[in-house]
Structure formats: structure tokens, C-alpha cells
Length: 157
Image 1 (tube, one colour):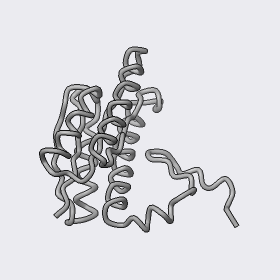
Image 2: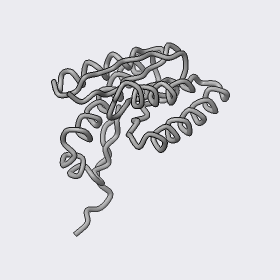
Image 3: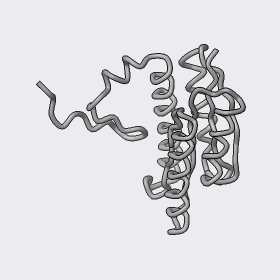
Image 4: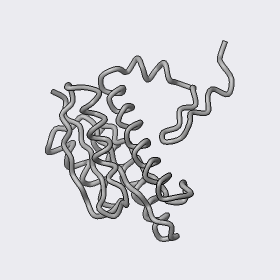
């Protein structure tokens, strides 16, 4: 069984980790989810790295919800750099799944966006690990996690 990490934060206002874990379990029994929660988005990278190096995870999802303030946006940028560094250091994928509060106009829309983005990235994780040929078929198709897909700009001939 392939182990995958799902790391979320207590700072987030929606339990995206649960949505991702449930979607992975719904899609396959070939992946075992190792779930962790950290305080904030700047803690995601190290926890994913720990899950990869100490818990044997083949890939991780890093789920976070930066706040609206400028300092939160800077924290998200720093967290993104940390996630990228952790990927390069481990040679394993860490899917960054961030939802910025201003992406939604209402609380209900925010909750739905968080859940959908987490689920759609969970599907990507399953595809990457178990069905890479499906990822190839999606190349250039304008996929958008949490929002409607935009489609291809132009098909190659």
C-alpha cells in the first residue's frame, strides 16, 4: 500500500484535510492516508517533509487558507517557497492546495470552494500516483481546481 500525506492547518476556517482524505479513500484502497494538522501555512512544508522522510509517504498534500491581511499573503508566499524546497529536497511531490479568502464572495461559497479544491487536488494526487496516463490526457485542458475548468486555448495539430 502506498502512503500519502495530507497536512492541513488549524488556522484554516474549513477542514480541507478531511475533504481530501475522504476523497482519496472514496477513489481507491491502494493509498493509505497519513494525516497531520499544523498551526499555520508556514508549518506545512516541514510536516510534509517529515511525512515523506520518516513516515514513507510517496507524496503529500499541503492544505492551507491564508487570511486576508497583507502579512497573511506574505506568509503564503513564504510557505510556497518552503513547499517547493521540501519537494526538491525529498524528490517527492507536495501538492500545494491554498484557498485565499477573497476568492469567495460569501461564507457558503468559501466552504464549497475549499472542499472542491481539496477534493479535486486529491483526485490529482491519485492520478499522479496510480494513473499517470490520465494526467497526460489532461495536459493543456485548462483544469481549474475549485472552479469550472476553462478549457484549452488551442489544440495542437
